[in-house]
Every structure is written in C-alpha cells, then in structure tokens.
Amino acid sequence: MVSKAILRYTRLSPRKFRLIIPLVKGKRAEEAIAILGAVKKKASGYGIDLLKSAIANAKVKNQGIDTSTLYISKMVADPGPMLKRFRAASMGRASMIHKHTSHLTVELDVIKTEVPVSVEGKAKDAIKKSKDTDKNTRAQEHKSTSITKKPKAKIAAKK
Image 1: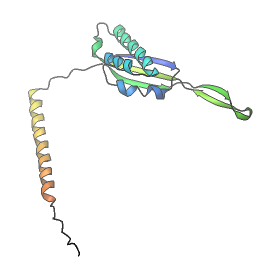
Image 2: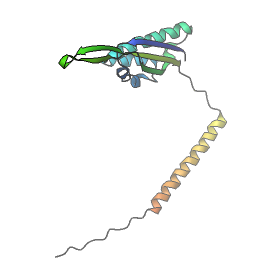
Image 3: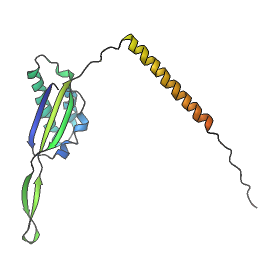
Image 4: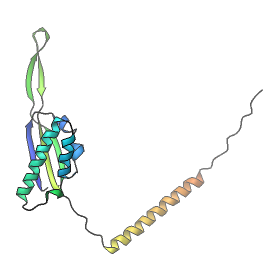
C-alpha cells in the first residue's frame, strides 16, 4: 500500500457505491478517473474526488513517485451510521425513514514489474507445458476411442 484515502459519512448508501467498485478495481488510477468520469452515477463523482485525494497522498508520502504506475489495489464501501427520520403515516402514526451513510476507502499501490525468469526456469516451464499437452491429447484420444457410435435401427413403416 503506497497511499490510502477515506471518505467518511457520505450521504449515499454503500449499495450504490458498490455498483462502481467493480468498474475500477485493479485498474490504473488515472484510467479509473477517466472511467468514472463517463459513468452517470452520483457515486462516481465521490469516487473521482477520492482517487484524486489518494494520488495526492501518494505524491506527498513518496516524493518523486510516478503517478502513472499507481493502481487501485483495494476499494471498499462500508456502511456508516444511519440517520433516522420520521414521516407521518395514516391514522396518526409515524413511519421511520432510514437515511444511509457510507465510508468509502481506496488504497493505491505501485504496479510491480515482472522479474525476468532465468533460462533454467524457462526450460522447466517448457518441459512442464509439453507434459501437460501430452496428457490432454492422450485423454482426448481415449475419449474418442472409448465412445463407439452404434447405427440407429431403421423402423419399417407399417402399411
């Protein structure tokens, strides 16, 4: 985790925030801001502000970090306290209204570059792949020979 940003007590239910989370989770931060800009939901506006805050936190915390290498490693929408209000109902009663709030958390991390595999590792992988393909072809051959198609008997038409 390079940086973290939390948006608390937002007057939007966590269920509505959870609609936008799968769209951006695992994506680069700048790409996620562009995606959320195109989404027509109130939660996307809050998400953009939160991502910008997390990027700014990363710049302050780690001087000289390249912001294009940041991606969203974790994004969670948790419920906050519920505001309870009353509305007049029939026959002099009152019905309760729950106004949901939520806490949105975003964690950014740096994209890790792949370490080149040694020549020995490549050779082992190639041997492993060839063994797997041999097993698959043998299994397919066994299936094709074990199933024999019997010709359907023709039924003579009665006159």
